[in-house]
Each structure stands twice: as structure tokens, then as C-alpha cells.
Length: 200
View 1 (cartoon, rainbow, N blue to C red):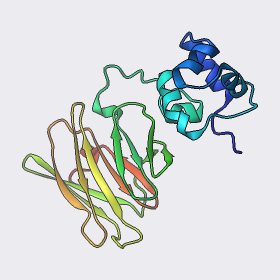
View 2: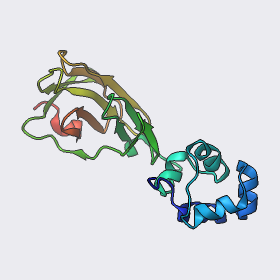
View 3: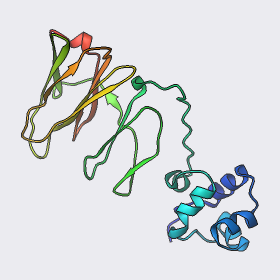
């Protein structure tokens, strides 16, 4: 059986919650000997117990399985701390202002690393009245395409979804926008400061 939850994690979280092995066992309906076996690596919780175990230990199931506690210190976050998580199976896009634990199709997602556009991922930005008109010069085939673009300011995100065989172009309201992101389904996330690109 693969070890998907470590005994060390269970013990650490139990102690942090100030629970004895017996108290934890009582809350999730197992014996204290069972909890002891988990913590010493002689057994593992049944998959049906993961949700009640995580709830009792005050963590997400993802945190319980990974053994990594997600601490979001961005109490007064703003949108400029945006993260984008993309499912490699279905292309689902999750936007977050701070750290998070996200899963899609059973896969734990990590935030996409942003980089500057390269020769194969060029973007043009024009100012048209109170909007940025962006055009991403990129093939839009069914296998290789730009999936979305987002304009981010300190208090909001404007996001547009693109589809294969369409055009990777859109308009965003200029007000406060400090970053524009776009995502290639093969090469990942790109980010620019629109002011540096406007009028190129």
C-alpha cells in the first residue's frame, strides 16, 4: 500500500490541536490503537476517513495528504499577488489572491510560474480610448493555443477565455491595470507591464 498520509503529519497535527490519540480516535470513530498505528507507520487511514480526519485536525484533505500546511499570510492581499492554477487535464483555470490548496481531476495544482514573453509568444498592446486592446500573435490550433488573458490591478481582475481556432485578442479597461497575463497551453504563463508595451 502506498503511503499517502504520513504518521508524522498526523501526530504533528493532532498535537497542534491539543488532542490525545484517544480523543482523536473518538472524534472519527476508530480506536486509539488505530491512531497509534498510523502515527508509528504501521498502518494508514482508510480513504473514507481522510475527510473527517482532516476536518478534526483543522486542515484541508490536500494539506493532510501532502503533509504541507498552507499558511496564507496575505491577510490584506491585493490582486497584484494573483496566482493562476491550471488543470493539465481539462484546462480549468483557478485564480487566487494568496496561497491555496487546489485540486482538479485528482491532481494537486501548483501556481503557474510567470515569465516574460519570448519570440514565440509576442503580444501587442494599443490604447483605444479608455481600454487596452491586446493581440497575442500565436497559432490557435486545437493542440496549441492561448487559453486565457487577464488584466490585473490592485483591486480587480478582468479575465477573458480564448478558444482554439479563434483569435487571441481582447480589450481590457485601463483603469489601474498594472499587469497583463496570458497563458499558452504548452508553454505556460506570461506576464507584461502594459505601459511598456503600449504603442509598440
